[in-house]
Image (cartoon, rainbow, N blue to C red; front, side, top):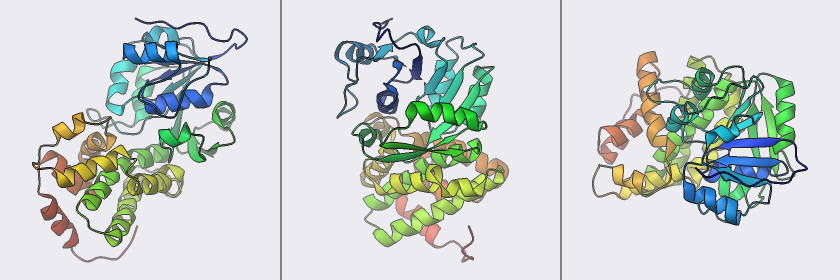
Length: 338
């Protein structure tokens, strides 16, 4: 395992980031006025960060001398602040490998998704794995490549304790990265998770050249499904109108910088309906995994989500794209009620 070199000895606090991907690295840049230690499983990434102060996955960015990396989770166990930036389906496996028992742990979940095998939200997963902790959710429209270029970005930080928000926001807010407070952890998670499903749908629509009218209708009706899902679990509907819901949905569905949108575009032009090779050709596509979890939850709880269901049918049942489109357009007429 690769350890890290000592950073500025004048700094007394080390912030841990669990995840050496592009988002974890972007967060490290924001937090680097403090000492930052990134956990990554890839030894090449660890070495590159420690030796050259860069992550080869992330363009436009180098780290300052306060940022180091390690492939040993144990080196993060004494970090008070732990930012989790892992692929959703890997969180349980990675976190369970280390003994995070510090009662002062302050956990900030920066991943977006729902665990498939348990149908649990990420706060529920982390609560099972790390006792005696404060848990927050950081979410919103925030492409990593823009964050590291210091382009203006605004996000939601959801936590039950307003004083905890004040502590964390002091670590991450700067003149280009603005943080808004919410006490609705569930609604914030739902917005961040579900928007990835609809970004896949938006990519398919773009790949099929369905036009701007169709995209606008798709985003609007996708948002209706998101709010319907949130209300079923008694999340605050208004949360979905904020950065972590509507804001992230608009960004992700309208930009080809989104991995989920790119995945949808590739699906539309694929020569066969087995999309496993497409998944292997790009970074983690959370929408592919989240749609399975949301499909299972919606069926169990009788939540009407026709767009989500069409995405599921295309990805997991190999349904024809145009057949699913026809089915959506020929649903019984109804009032436009969100």
